[in-house]
Length: 236
Image 1 (cartoon, rainbow, N blue to C red):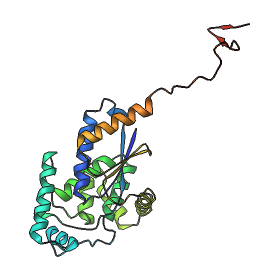
Image 2 (cartoon, helix red, strand yellow; image 1 turned 60 degrees about the horizontal axis):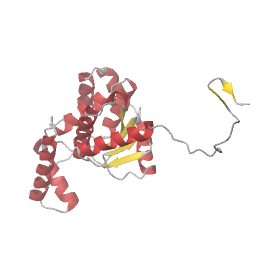
Image 3 (cartoon, rainbow, N blue to C red; image 1 turned 30 degrees about the vertical axis):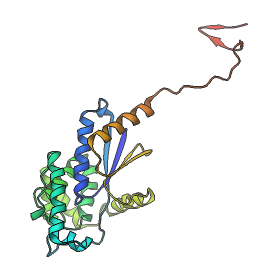
């Protein structure tokens, strides 16, 4: 079973949804036969690398609400995160552009480190208050999971993996994905949003059963037909 997850590293529900999916997989007997792949999606392709506003101020301006309302909304999200063992520090988050972070994830994928890199980038943004578009920061994060710091710097200074990121985003558009997280299972089933763990587990079980159930064929042969061989014998 293959689960493709379209997500962004500055999307709070992407991190929460990731953890809920992981908790569902922990309860899924066939978890060793499930492959999880992260696909690129930018919530704002025009996002700046640095802002002189807090995340509360940015959200208030974007949605036309007060800063207090934005803070309350973020506090609600932080509580959801805490329920799955995550710590979100909205007060010190550094809003930024995530294109280079997605390029780094593609590089990590090529070296068998995609899942580790995705987790480290999400934690860096939501918990550690790291500036995840800064190349020095990204190189440090990559080195923490065993990737070559200097090679990562060269990758980030170039345009490598840009096409791969754009391809994911184009594919998301073709699939009708307008928001993240978005989970696609076996290119046949879809789950939108950070659904409860129980929903993920039910989906895993349903897909596994449907994909692995024996196909029963409806017989159309007359009951008295003798034109066959079976058990080493042919009827004559």
